[in-house]
Each structure stands twice: as C-alpha cells, then as structure tokens.
Image (tube, rainbow, N blue to C red; front, side, top):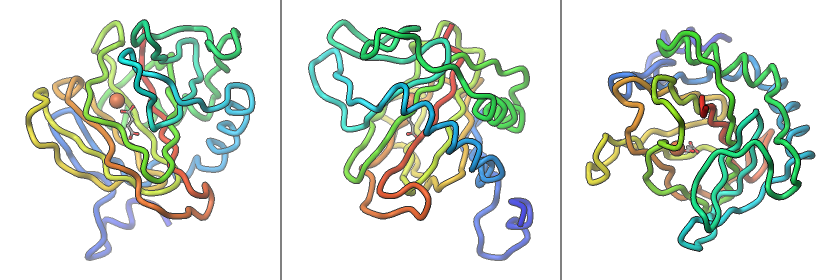
Length: 217
Ligand code: SIN
Ligand code: FE2
C-alpha cells in the first residue's frame, strides 16, 4: 500500500503535513527504504557503537549517539562541534551509505529543497525515558541546507517550536518511517523530543532511532 493511498482513507492522518513555512512531516516516507536503511544502520553501529556523550556543562545526555558521513556531531567538555574523527575509535566515522544518502536527498526534494548534499548523519538512539530538550541546530557552517530527520522504531512526540525558545512548541507524533524536513524560514526553529514512552517495536525493539542528516561543512 502506498502512503498516498492513506490520504483517501477517512480518519487516517495525511501522508504530508505542513508544520511551518519550510517545514513538513512526510509520514511513512522512509518505509519503502526500510530494509536497506536498517541493514546499513547495523553496519555503522558495528564500526561506531552508540555512546552517551557529555554536554559542555558536564551533563551526560540520555540519548546515545553515533554518526556516519565525513563529519560527525560530537559534544564534550570543550563544546559542540563537527569532527571527521570518532573520538572513541580515533578513526574516521563510517561513510554515509548510499541508502541513507538517497533517502535524505529524496526527502529534501519532497520537502522543497533540491540539491541537498548531506555530509553528516547524526544517529540518535532513544530508550524509554530518553529525551532531547529544545534546541536549535546551529553548529553547521551555513543554514541554506535543510535538516532531514528520519524516525525508526518506537513512536515519539516531536516538539517543534519557533525561532524563540520561549514559544510553546507544537507536538507531532513521529512513527517508524516518518520523515521531517525543515529548512529555509524554519531552519533555526527550536525543536526537541519528549521523554520516550515504554514500548516494543516489532522490528527495532525497545528503542527509537533517529537519523538526522545535515550539510555541516
Ligand atoms: C535532533 O534534533 O537531533 C533529534 C530529533 C529527533 O530525534 O527526532
Ligand atoms: Fe536537532
């Protein structure tokens, strides 16, 4: 069944939902690539296992992270930055698999952003209770490229606000296969993830994995 068919079913949420100017939720967009993406993910985490990093303030994040691509997002006592080297292994991050890149580029195009050329994919793993507080993605060198975010596994509540931290964010339920693209006027909007609820996903188990594609450099 294609995602478009859902649009015609009464009571079912639309496959495409505008979130803000420049931001769109593409429900089920990653489902056709699901097995290739999950297979590639397994290879990445065998080379660069998930780890819970520390914020510059010394707080250990509840979300475990790893990266693929020529640049990886890292945080430690000295700050947030992109680095080509995995600090745990001393080796470059695993390269970005074609299945990842192709999905990200197709989603960016569907979101209205052509010629997306991601060089970084931050991979977040949430277990029940893990959360990500409201933040802006602003460690990238230029903000012309969008952010493409792919959700796998357990559902989560994604918080999507505005350019002002104090504005109350809207809440969107993101399920396995959903993709969010934000850029242009909403590129620097605050966003986060509410504490993950307990559950067991048929393919992914007791976790949510989020792939966040960026053009970092
Ligand atoms: C992030 O902002 O890096 C993660 C968003 C998500 O997990 O959906
Ligand atoms: Fe983010």
